[in-house]
Length: 309
Image (cartoon, rainbow, N blue to C red):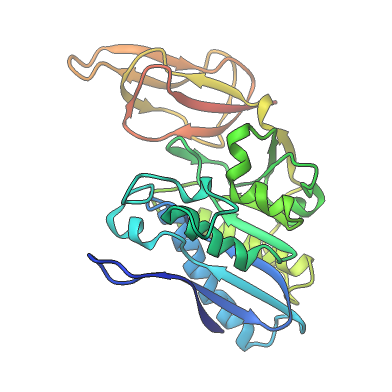
């Protein structure tokens, strides 16, 4: 393993801002793994840190294929991570909305430019990403429809689901979108949680990445854990369930639960008198794919996404 400073910037208030990368193997740039760009992505940070540790063991055993190199960037936003602030702590901008970056622009544009310049030539790219709504997911691989998406490659992770969706205009500044346009086979990996660490989901994500490396000939072994025959979902087909009232959210069902029309998945409680304002019910047969997990909910906020059976 060798360590490289991807980007460095002095700060008048804290230690020098550094984005560090860890290289494994030698040869063609085969796989880049990019960790959290937001300061609340604790699960993604943990997965990347433990992946660096695992790749050190794999490299010591000589199991990285000759002529292949792997780069892991465990975090792109250590400042915000230190203060548990989701976006760039100085001005609230989102690094993952700044790609491919601009090296003479604003700070987050410069950060994105430095990262993208380092990773744009890799054959494969994996981003440990999080959803814009706080909540839990069934672990899955996500891609944007750019014409360059690689569904067959996504199946090599062996996760239960692959989701694809049409990009919106502002999605053209995402890392996943730009990686694909620059002809990297790019995948966003959603590991179930964001602000909390789930050991089981983290293990599933690590083994999925190792399975992908083994099946693409980057390392010479594949984890023995069973893989899924991934189900492909267009995100437009997921059924959204929104709150009709604001209040305290009492979850009765979480991700992975099978539901039928009329099943009560959660309740919304009046925060002043404890009355039940709403029973949130399933409207279709299916499986809960996403579940909001914070204790308070706003009116019209997304609570669930259901994958129809």
